[in-house]
Amino acid sequence: MPRRGRAAESAAVGLLFLLLLAGTACGSRLPESDFENRPDRTPARTTAEPIRVGIVTSATSPVGGDAFTGPRDGAKAWFDALNARGGIAGRRVEVRTCDDGGSGVGNNECVHRLVDEDEVVALVATSALDYAGASRVSHARVPDIGGQPIGAAYDTWPHLYGIYGSLAPRNGKPGWDGELYGGTEIYRWFKERQGARTAAVVSYNQPASAAYARLVVRGLKAEGYEVVTEQVDFALPNFRAAAADLKERGADLVFDAIDTYGNARLCQAMDDVGAEVLAKVTNVQNWTSTVREDYKKAPRCRNTLWATGASRNYEDTGHEAVREFRDGTKALKTRSQWQLEGWAAAMWFTDAARSCAKKGVTRACVDRFMAAGKPYTARGLLLPVRFAHLPEPPRTRRTCLSVARWEDARGWVSQGDMDHDCYDVPQLSYKP
Image (cartoon, rainbow, N blue to C red; front, side, top):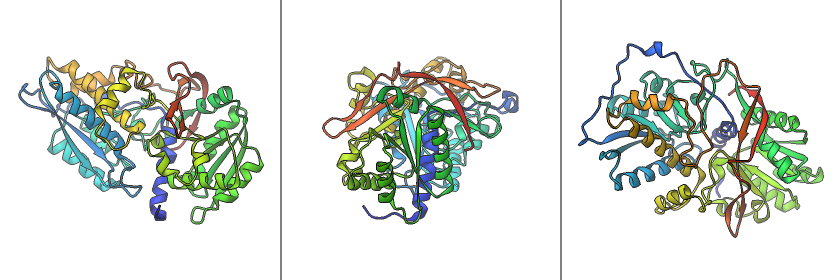
C-alpha cells in the first residue's frame, strides 16, 4: 500500500477520534419558537411526483476514496429496492447525491444545492468529514435522518437526527455547555465476557489522537483495568517498539487512537514481535469485508480483530432484516457495517414518510415523526435509537452494544446478543 500524506493521516486521526466517541455520545434541539415564522418550504405533492431526498457524502475526501461511501451506498440500495416495490404510497423516491469533497466549503455547496435548489424533503445517511452546512440545514428545518456523527453536529443542532440518537439540548452548542458524554460499556463487556484485565492504548503524539487516548484511558481505569499507554511519533511512528512493549507488559486488549493505515502497521508489528492479545479492538467504520486486504501482512493479528458498535452485524443472516439488507446489496463489491446503517437510515426516512402519506410528505411532517421521541430500531438492525432533550447530562446510562470478531474462515462473527449485552455504566465527559 502506498504511503499517504501526513495531511490525509491527520484528517483520518481526527475522524477516528470522533467516530470512536460517536456510539455513546448524546444530543437535543433549539426552541421551536425560533422558527415559528419560517414556512415549510416543501409543499405536499401529487402522487404523480417523486419524493425527493438528498445524500451528502465526502466521497472524494483526503481520507480516502471509499472511506465515507458506505452509508450512501446502503441508503441508495434501500431506495432502489423500495422503488421496485412501488415506492411510498405509489410515489417513487428520487435520490439526489452530492460529494462535498471532505471540505467545509464543499459541504456548504452541497447543502445549498440540495436544500435550496433541489428542495429535498430530507437528507438521509449523511457522512461528511466537515459538516459545515449543518446549521443551514437546521435553520431550514430540513430533517437530516440517520447521519453518521463524525463531528459534533448531531449533538448541536435541532432537526438533525444521527444514527445513534442524542439526549442533549441541541441548542447551538455541542452537548451540554460544549461537552459530550460517553460510556464505558465496551470496556465492561471485555472485562466480564473475556476476562480482560490489562489494556494497551496506542496513540500518536498529535492533539486529537492524544485527547481521545486520554478518554479511553479514563474509561478503562473506571472499569478497573491496568492500563499501558503507548504513544508513537506522528511523522515517523515506531510501531515495532510499541508492539514489543505491550507484549512485554502482557496486554490483554489493544485500543487505539490512530488511523486505519496505522492500525495495519501496528498489527504487522505485533505479528513481527510475537505479541498475542485477546483482542485488537476497532470501531464500526472498520467493520468491513476488506479486512483480509487491509491487514494482509498481519494474519495473526487480524484474527484477533474485534469490532463494537450499535447495529446488528451485517453477517448475521439468521436475522430477517439482515437477510433483506444482504439481498438488497448484492450488487455492491464489498460489504460493511456503515452500508447496513445507511440502509437503516433510508428505512427510517421511509417509515417517517409513510406516516405522512395521507396528508402530504413535507419536511414538517417528517420532522414531527422524527422528533416524537419513540425509540427506533429499523426492524431490529439498530439498538433502540432515542432522542430527548435532557437539561443535564446523565451520570450513568444503561447502554447495549453489538460485538463481532473477525475470523478468516467465516468473516465477522457475532459475539453475544446486542439486545441483551447491556450495562449500567458511568458517562464520562469530553470536548469534541
